[in-house]
Image (tube, rainbow, N blue to C red; front, side, top):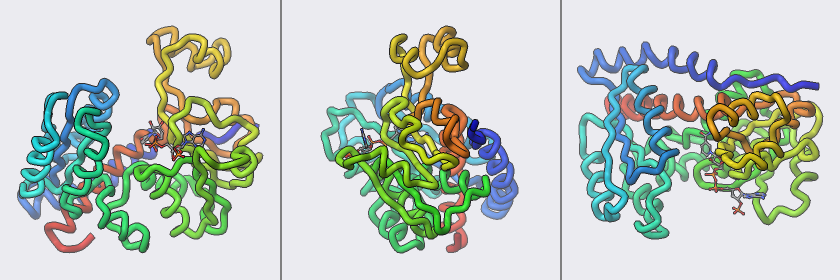
Length: 311
Ligand code: NAP
C-alpha cells in the first residue's frame, strides 16, 4: 500500500484564492487592508525563513504585513512595549510574535508576551481568552497549525466524526488545540506525550494519527494502523549524513536534497509509514503551507471582527 499524499501546498493555494475576494471587500469598505504586525527578536535562521514566508504570503493575498525587528539583546520590557504599540495600532488587526524568543529573556518570556497581546488581535490563538473559548468550542482565533490540520482533513474528505484520533504531543501551540478541534468534530481523542506507556500500541489504535513531537522520523510503521490517516506536523532539519541515511534510502528525494543542499527537512514520521497509512501529509509541503494560510485567515477574521463586530 502506498498512502495517498495530502498535498498541503495545493490546498493552501486554493484557500488563499478563496480569501482574496473577502480581503478585497474589506479593503474597499475600510479604505485599508487587513493588517498584520510580526515581531521578530534576534536572528534565528529558521525563524527568519518562517517570517519571510509569512510576509510574502500576506503580500500575495493583499494583506498589509509589517515586520518589527528587535535585536537578540532586546529586553523583555522592550518587546512588551512593541506589543503594546501594536495593540493600540488601528492599522494592525493581528499580532504575531515569532517564537522562540532568546533564552536571555527568561523562562516565562513567551507566556508574558502572549498574555500581553490584545486577545482580539491574537492571530496565534495563544492568549488565555482564546484558549478558553476554544475549550468551549466558540473560538474566533485558533492556533494556526492545528486549524490548518483540520482544514486539510476536512477538505480531503477524511471522516472525523466517530473516528479514533490520537495526537502525539501536548504543546500549547499544536497538540492541545489539535486535540480540542478533533474533539469538537466528534472524534474520540487520546493525547500522548513523552510519559505515555506503550506509545506504539496506543498510536496504532488511531484512525487519525497526528504527530507533533519534534523528533525526526520517530513514528515508524509499528505505530500505524493499516489504512490510517497520518498527519506529520514535525519539521526537523537534518544536517548529519548518518542521520539522513537512517531515514532516507539510496536514490530517494530526501537523499538527493541532502546531497545538493547539505541539509534536508524531515517530519516526525518515518517515510516508510507511507507503506502502511491510507493517507499521509508530506514534509515539506503538508502542514507547513496550511499554517501560513491560516495565519492570513485569522488576520482577516480579526480585522472583520474589529471592523464589523462579526466573524
Ligand atoms: P514542543 O513544544 O517541543 O512539544 C513537543 C511535544 O512532544 C511534548 O508534548 C512532548 O511531551 C512530546 N514528545 C517529545 N518527545 C516525545 C516522545 N519520545 N514520545 C512522545 N511524545 C514526545 O513542540 P511543538 O511546538 O508542539 O512542535 C512539534 C513539532 O512540530 C516540531 O517539529 C515543530 O518544528 C513542528 N511544528 C511545525 C509547524 C508547521 O507549521 N509545520 C508548526 C509548529 C510546530 P512532554 O510534554 O511530555 O514533554
